[in-house]
Amino acid sequence: MLHTDLEFVSLCSDTTFKYFLKKEDTRNWIYEIIFRKTGIDLSEFQSVDNE
Image (tube, rainbow, N blue to C red; front, top):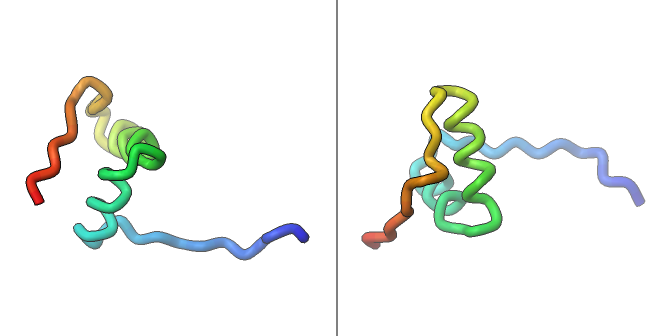
């Protein structure tokens, strides 16, 4: 069965943003969004979790 429903995730919530940034699977996706919107390349930075 083909799943055709689109889902929207708001990155405006800091909790959502942190969740995606902490997960190895989605970190590059967040970096790509930031790069496309700002031109800032975060791929060389190391993420540190202080929580």
